[in-house]
Length: 300
Image (tube, rainbow, N blue to C red; front, side, top):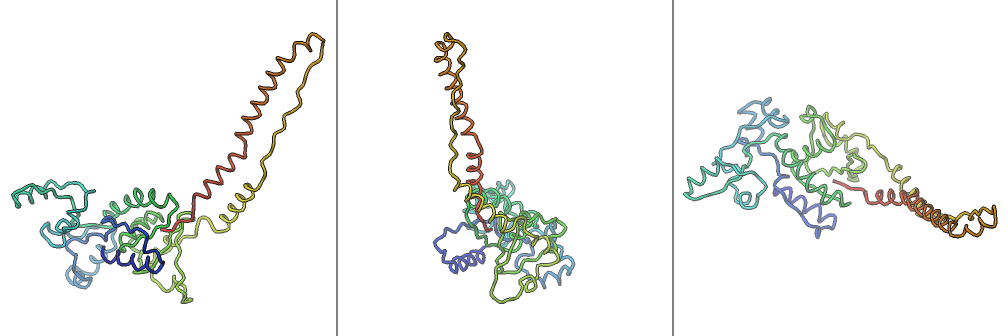
């Protein structure tokens, strides 16, 4: 995760936002390649063949060979992970073996020994939906996520609803910012000032059609909503005038007995008009306007 952290530093420094808190999580780490960790693509192709290499790299549920518990590449042998990671289940077998070897109790977590994109998403997507969305996105904050290709591919598969069979054809260029608009539900690319269409400049693979779908809502829609909200806020409150009281003058005896009943009738009518005015369209329009303004333009 070191390269991802450094990338976040560069981005925040360029934006002038170095004061913004930086939150780190192992759940956004690159997928665990198992026994293939530390080997180049050419070495793996020479040993296992090009076809098997493509299946391991781009397959959705195909796991690479697992790493040994005593390998330096195993995350459970990393001091930083064993000390700070607490949101993993305890591994009974690893705890017994390591406690027997150390002659004292050593609680060991169930760190992955190999991961496919599918198993990688089992840790990255819950972090996005349970931490990033409620703590930042739903509060109207803009979020910068810097991570490695497979973790980002998994998040985009979740956001853009990319089918499983198309994931092996999706490529994400390194160092290219991808802006996801939560409200419009689409991805855009930043203009680098070169004048070259980024879609032709970068290779996203045949599955780019799923990544760059047309936005569900355009800017004109939100402009109209803003104008309607402004007009509704400018309209004056409508005053409800009480209708004249109707008094039946049948006889002098009725006129003498009417005042008490008439006061009750006017009180009942006034209360009824007050309730209708409170529950009318004016209050509902304010509520919808407030909800619209809270839903700001997020970028993920």
